[in-house]
Image (cartoon, rainbow over all chains, first blue to last red):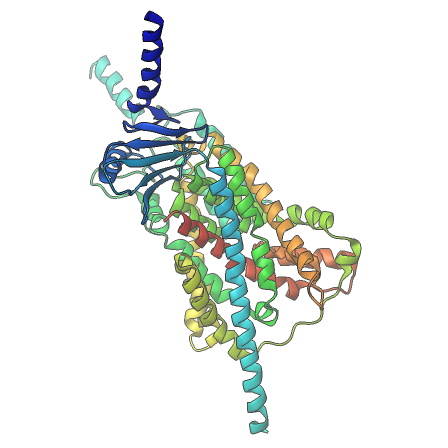
Length: 152
Length: 381
């Protein structure tokens, strides 16, 4: 009976302990139930509204630099542009009382992705300019051809 | 006068001198300043910038000098005022671009618009270095400002650094101008490594003549494209194209001449001294400037490689091949890298004149670097 009590207590402890405020990569988390946790991210279900959690992080990070807040349709996205161990916080806008919060570690997928995209974008900008130059060159060629005989 | 009074007087006098507050780390800064003054005066490496930067650095590294601080009344001291209105307000890089635009003939680029692609390819190092800089522990904004050094464009480097990571301004500007001066040493080995002798001997058809009207329309077209696609960099590119429009229109000769000479020279002095003044011992002596110098050279090398490799890839699709050497000129550093290409081509064939062909990618590099800077600004806005 004593053993059973200990097992029961341990099970309760395992499930309940994440509900208390903990940390992930040095970032304090709101109190809630851990849905998923890996080395690269943690996903929580928090019994608070989206606004309450957003205010929690705004207050917590108010003196921090190099942070970007994005208000998207499905979530508020807080991104670290500094050198913190975590990369982003996703606060999902879900109907109901509970809110899903996800803290991500992975910076490198984002860095490589954004850099590749922006390198390609530099090509696109200069290619558009090239096309514009080619078109204006052709226009000038034609205009000149038409003007030359008139002058003659 | 009592003995104590005399001592007190002497003490009072002594504490107002720099000797009393002297710290060993300023000696290191003097040595660094002397090194850059040596490069400017003796080696003549980018003297117009390295001289005022070096002297500005020397000036601020004395204890108690009223140059970069704030007075009791709350206004800035001399160099603080230059720095505040010139760099913090991002005015000087834009005015320099106005002058550069007025000095630039875009004819080679207009005659061969393909060279714009080389200017884009040569930005490879900017993005590669970003990754390396993050790995070295810099913040993302700092990484962007260090990465842009490889674009070999001083005003753009200063503009972006001031925008994203002003604490690195001195080190970044110094690295950019130092390596720009060393382009003749950095680029040839990489070009040789990536090209065959056959490719280096490749001759290119003479560029078509470009009409005055085309040159006038170019700054308008370019401004329109950049403003629509990368609006964040339009303070720089807008001024660049305004300067060029003033030059090519031919109707405001006085303005164009002022932008090219008097104005350009005045702001260059303020730019150099202000950048130098940011390098006080307590800010500069850390591991970061060393990393920046280390990464800067890798940046230049990868950018050069990016340009050459882009030219080689383009040759796979082009009927009329281009000499891959001119890809290296995509790293702006106008006109130094174009001259390097010319010299290298002449080494292998005394009749192969590539200067005008290399000027195209060289000018495209300026636009490419500005576009890359705009991408970074957009990334963090």
